[in-house]
Image 1 (cartoon, rainbow, N blue to C red):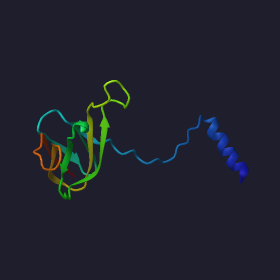
Image 2 (image 1 turned 45 degrees about the vertical axis):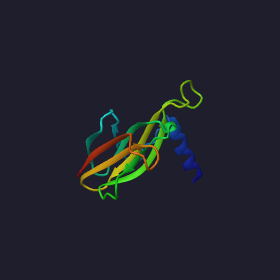
Image 3 (image 1 turned 45 degrees about the horizontal axis):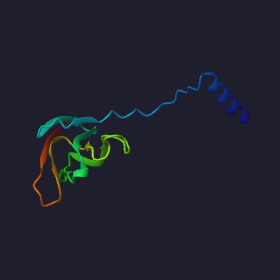
Image 4 (image 1 turned 180 degrees about the vertical axis):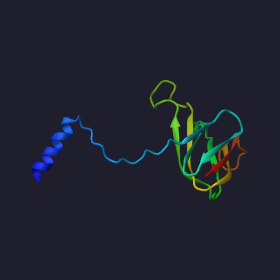
Length: 138
């Protein structure tokens, strides 16, 4: 038994380490919607695919993006991540803006509106709004 395993290992090394196994298909990359400075946009998203919405932000000013997606049967909110524009300690890094990235998954066919507000605190009026109409297609 050990001899067979050792022979298999030697064969694997001799072929350059390649071993053809039935591998899982890599999931397609998320569809991205980038903030272009407008107040909104629209996108078609295939069922089961992910959607990334990237909005310019600078939390050092006290403003943050707030999401109002409701309880949608078509679009499931998965995560939110802030990506600074410059690494900490880099020139121009302190106080510089970055990107708020919101990740969703299409879970049902139909059209959904996702509303974002860029505001400081809960009582103030939003400085910016962004509305995205997402049409999930089967």
